[in-house]
Image 1 (cartoon, one colour):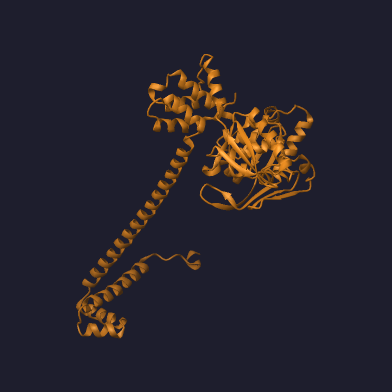
Image 2 (cartoon, rainbow, N blue to C red):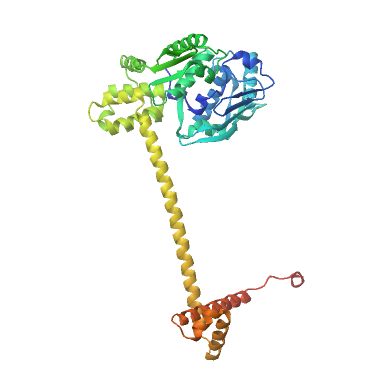
Length: 455
């Protein structure tokens, strides 16, 4: 039985496009570098040997450690722990293979040229996988520095899927493992998926080019996936024309999770004393928290799918179940009904955040406008007080100065005492008064010492 700690958050983009290659011969022939391009704009560059299944198992295990440490970019771990957890023998050859794998990932560069989907739009993006790695001379521990952008990509920005590490590493067949990745992505939110056999071979990629050669190998890979994982798929070939065959994949009724729950029911129920399980139980309606049949379902799916998966489906059930809570919860957990609700909630939250940001910008602008208006009013009041304090002679002189600053048309209006003339004259005089007040304030400021006076 797997646990929630074995569920790795994986970018759907990097399940769709190959992060590693299942062809061992291709890897052995690529020691001096390798470039693979997809017609949709995905470019994969490797300056050393091409990563294969062993390498992606190492990578996912390191990502699992990063994930458990809140997606840290630097992972420090013993090499023994990596080899043991990834199922390799403890010998010098395995240690050398781990070092070689890190070197492979360090030399990988990935570019999505207008084909990276973040749940909203397609973007162009370029990043590496591992920036560097080192072994401590004293502790012999390995320290791996992930590319910050790679960690960000694996988070998925709302466009991700959880991969079961235990299932992933026990598939053994590289083709079944790569197909497992593609099926995980392709059944994101659907139960039936169809694709042309040749196109699937290109997507994996496979060296086979004809349906007659491709289909038997895909069928064998599907059988292995069904044997080694908690998900069951059926595959039905449908020939359209010569050289053109559609493969229809269907995710069948998931009886395996129910079998796990039933197996738990035969034993004395032991509720794990972990913060995750306690948090999940607290999400249940209070009358349901002590019901053994409900707890069996929650714990069974928690150990199989992880805390986030169970949490969103409990929330979905709480919102939609009118009667028969247990049946509705089991149905939601089987089909992951909570995913769509979670995505909708995330979309609403993003909209609310944008609205709050816009409101803050408007409030800031209004505050600034009010401040500027207040400053203008204060300056106008000071100018009017200045004019009022002048002697009649000085006011007359300012009157003449104001007239001299006006263009001829406005000056003629003032001379004729036309409507609005007094206002225009007053504004011109206030402008002169404001300038004089500013000059007076500037002259009052202490001057900085020069070199001579400082000496």
